[in-house]
Image 1 (cartoon, rainbow, N blue to C red):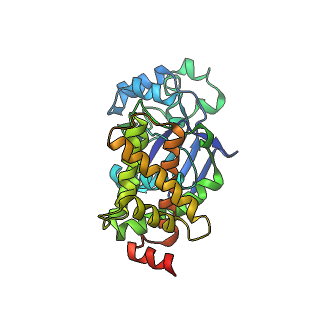
Image 2: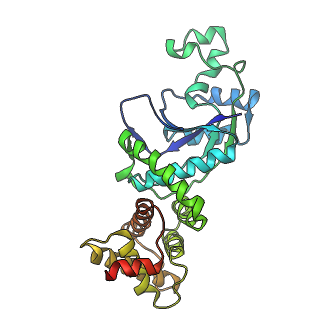
Image 3: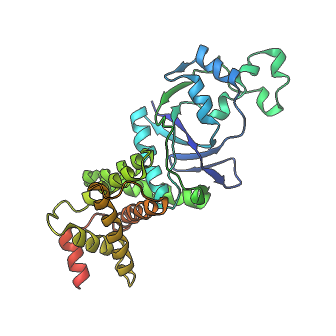
Length: 303
C-alpha cells in the first residue's frame, strides 16, 4: 500500500504564495496553524509516537513548512526519496536544513486536534479548524529522524522558492538514476546530509573532504595538485577553471592543516567555501549524467 510521509523542515522560509506546491511525488506544504501543547498531548496519549511529544513541540517552533513524499511503500523508501530531494535542493542553492522527525499526517492535520475533540472548545476554534482530523479519523504515527540540537546553516540562503523546488524535483530523479548505476556516488549525498550536523566547523570540513576525495579513488600521489586539477575540470571547462583550482587548493591546504593539528578553528566563510565546492561538484555530476574518470577529465583538459 502506497503512503505519504511528512518531513517538517526547520529554519527555512517559504518564498512562494501558494499554501502548497505539488511536483511529481513531492509536495511542499506551508504550516498554517500553531500546534498547542494540548494537541501534542493528545498525540502522545491516543496515537503512536516513537519519540517524546515534548521534542516534537520544541522542534516545531522552527518549522514553517513540510516536505511530503507520496506514493511510497515504506518509511525507508520515503527517507530515500527525501534524501534525494534535499540533495537536489542544496544543489539549487538552499542552505543546509534539518528534518527532526517524520509523520504520516501533516502538522496542519493534527493542529487543533485537542479542541476539535471537545464540543465546547471546538466552537472556539477558527472556522477553518473546527472540522478536520480527530483521533477517530485515524492514528498519527511519528518516527525520530534528525533530532540534532547542533547544526550549521546559512541564513543568507534559507528562502525556498517554487522555482527552486520544481527544478530540484527533476534533479532528484536524475540523481537517483545516476546513483543506481554508480552506488559509490552516494557518498556525496551522505556527506551533505551529515556534515552540517557536526558541531565543529573543522571536523565538518574534514568530513566534506572525505566526500570530495571519494570522487577520485585512484589518486595515490600528489593529492593536492591532482584533486585540484580534476575538480576544477569537473566543475567547469570554461575560463574560470583557474579560480576553481585556487579555491580547491586553499580548501585542501586547510584540510591538511586541520589533519596535522596546525589549525583547530576555521571561519564560517572557510567552511562555506568547501561546502560550495562539494555542491558544485555534485551539480556537475548531475549535469554530465555520470562521474567521469580521472583519465576522461585529463583528456578533456588537454583537448
